[in-house]
Length: 112
Length: 113
Image (cartoon, rainbow over all chains, first blue to last red; front, side, top):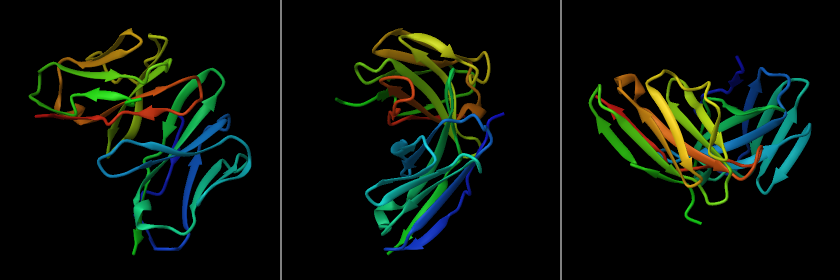
């Protein structure tokens, strides 16, 4: 059973701070990793994808991947109240399988 | 493009009734996915199609669930008979190619009484 684990939160950070969201996965063969943001009552939207070990930056967002530790994280710099949402980590296991396994999400609250 | 379109947006029904959820993927997307989201289990893949052909239905919970994709622009997810434990938000998503970004529709909130 492939598993993706996230702290459910809520994670509260003050406006302007760095929010750090973490995710671990069980399938060592996983090759693709995604972070989705989901506002309350809305559908998930992709904000970052990462495929190789290391960091990937996109604006205020940085995704970090460590395949040896089976760990992926998302950093949000200069957090804004509009970043308040649930962040879902998703993992694809690779060749021959296109099933995305989602974590249950971490709820982030950015306090003005 | 209008994005992924789902209908109805909300559905309230009684136990034992048939429920049909509908999805129109983004034009040109070859992959279509049906997900179910609950607080307890999170977001789960039920089934996905490639070029209208079901590829993996291992996530379909029971024989009460069935999905079809008669053409590239339309898919249905049917629950017959429905049960209270089927209450959830059902999302449809589409993607242009394997391992590409999945674009989610607005979801159908299903409540089975």
